[in-house]
Each structure stands twice: as structure tokens, then as C-alpha cells.
Image 1: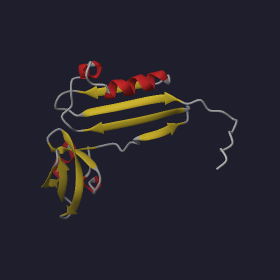
Image 2: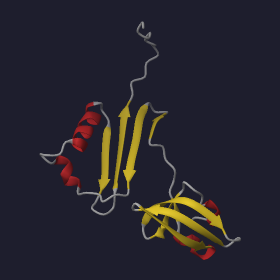
Image 3: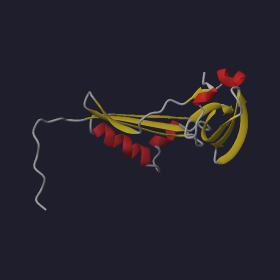
Image 4: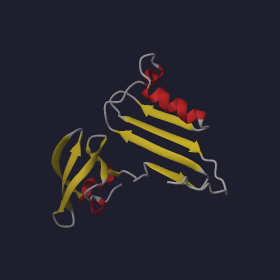
Length: 143
């Protein structure tokens, strides 16, 4: 459940335009029980008024880091969109190399490469690569 007070510009909310997450561009309060929301979804901009009674139908997207280092010594990253999606079998296609190449490089580094996609539901790509941490610091090359 998302409270009306959590709907601010830049947030991503599901439940305003069906099951897809939308990006909130503007939010204007009309007293304690209503908010006018201007949002972007599927490349179009629209507006709606949300009422306190609709809070149970709204879901706020959890902010995440696109790339980062964790304390366990690994590099991790996630990329996602709400585009048209695709069937995962296309990754192994003989004529398409983008995702297959990414997967191969990540696995060569001992990492994991995950793709979640289906037609009409967008795509989420995540990867994890272990880092070899050393106590030795190599000097920078002379300029």
C-alpha cells in the first residue's frame, strides 16, 4: 500500500495506469484526501486524481541502485525498462549477439547474468561479478 503523501515527483507507482509502473512528473494535493498526479507511462503523459480510498491499490517502486559494490566483494548491476519485452530464447539466436555477448563476458569473469523478459512486460537484466580485492596498491603510470 502506498500513502498519498508518498506520491512525489520522480517516484514510480503501479496502480495508476493498470499494472505498469508510471513515473510521477507532478503531484498537487487537494486537501488531506486527494492528489492530482501528472505521470508518464508508455511514452505518453496523462493526469488523474487519486483519493485516499485508492491507496490500497497503489504500489511504490522500491528505489534501487543501477550499479554498485557490495561488502562481499562483488560488482552488481541492474537495468530494466517497461518496453515491449521479448522471448528469452532470442538471446541464443544465431543473428543477435548483444545480450549473449554480455552474458558470455560476465560468465568469463565468474559472475552471473540474469534476464527476465516476456512479450508485453518489459525487461530486467541483472549481473553480479566477483571482484578480486588486493591489499597491494599499484602505482599510477607516469604521465
